[in-house]
Image (cartoon, rainbow, N blue to C red):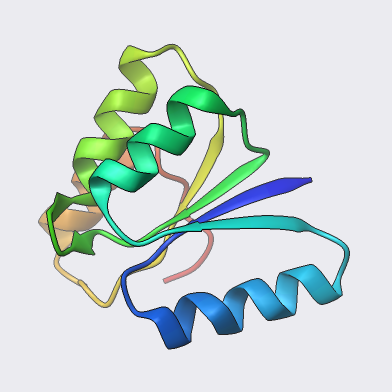
Length: 100
């Protein structure tokens, strides 16, 4: 499975990539909204791990663009944000809830 890790913290993104690659997943990384959107336009992913707080905008923009493009890539939101509004917005845009 091909996984896109959208995370601006390089240490965290590298750690996730290392763990997933060790399990046989093919991983790509993006550190910004612009970089992520470029990759999403070019490739399909089995799963996208998405941080909401990025240096050039919100991960919610990426979720909205995925749906506009008709992409059905699975999205797991990885974020330190814990507000109910953020959780509801992420779910309404197509993110999946795995745990509290």
